[in-house]
Image (cartoon, rainbow, N blue to C red; front, side):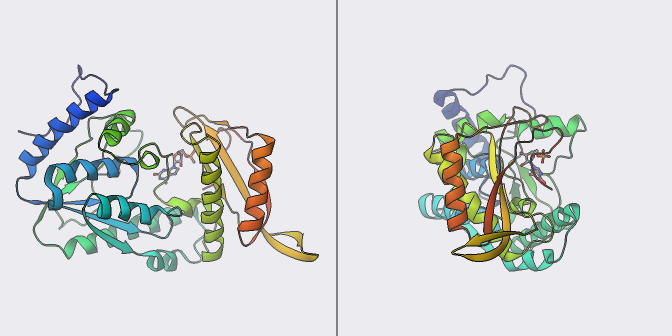
Length: 328
Ligand code: XMP
C-alpha cells in the first residue's frame, strides 16, 4: 500500500480521541507495510510535529526508528532534557543526542545580520544531522513532520516546503510522512492520544533558529543565557497563571544595549529584558495580550532578581503590523 500523499476531500476532521485512535491504528499498519524491517531516521526537534511523528513510528516499528536530537544551543531551558526523558527513557526510543552548542555558537560569533544568522543555523543543522546519518548503517527511510498546511503553502507559492530536502545530494532516502495529511489541531489530537505530555503537544510555536532570533545582533553566551533564563521564568509564570495554551506566543528578548541602573547602592550597567506576548489566528496580523498589573510586577521582580545581567524589564505593546512577532 502506498502512503496517502493527498488529504482526501471527504476526510473527517480529527476532533475526538476516538478519531485520533482510528488514525493512529491506520497509520501503524501503513507504516509497518511501508517500512518492513528497514530502518528510519528522524530529526527530532521536540516540536509538536516531529514529536508526534516519533511517537507514531515508535508505536509502529519501535527501535527501527533512529531519532537524532541536535541541540544547537538555542533551545529553551529544559527542552533537550525533556526530549531525552520522554523519548529515550519513557518510550525506549533509539535516540542519538548531539550537543552541538559550541559548534553553532562559535560559527555565530560576531555575526550580526539576521539573515546570515538564520543561514548559519540552518546550514549547520543539516551538516550535523548529515554527519550523524553517515555514521549509521542500513537506513533507508527519512521521516519528516510535514503537515498539510506545509503542502498547501508550498503549492500556493507562499513558502518553500522546508522539510523536504536540504540534505547532501548523495544522501537519498525514501520519505516517511505520517502526519502529512493532517492539520495542526489534528496533529495535536493524535499526539495527545499517543500519550505525549501536554506541554509538548500544546506548546506555542517556536522558530527553527530558536533563541537566536531573540538575542538580536551578535549572539554572546552571557546574553543568550539571559534570554533563556528570562524565557523560562515567563513560561513558568504563564503556566501558573492559567495563560499557557491561551496566549498564542510569549517570550523574552534581550537586545544588545545597556542602560544605567542601581543595585545595592552601586551603579549597574546592564541589558533590558523585553517581554512579548501576542495573540493571532494566522500570524499575519497579531494583537498584544495585556497582562494584569500584579503579574507584570511579579515578572519584573523575578527577572531583575533572578537573571544575571538584566536591570530593566520592558513590555512590547506593538501589534503586527507594523512590528513582526520576532525581533529578527
Ligand atoms: P514573524 O516574526 O515573521 O513571525 O511575525 C511569525 C511566526 O513565525 C515564527 N517564525 C519562524 N519560525 N523559522 C521558524 O520556524 C523562522 O525563521 C521563523 N521566524 C519567525 C514566529 O515565531 C511566529 O510564530
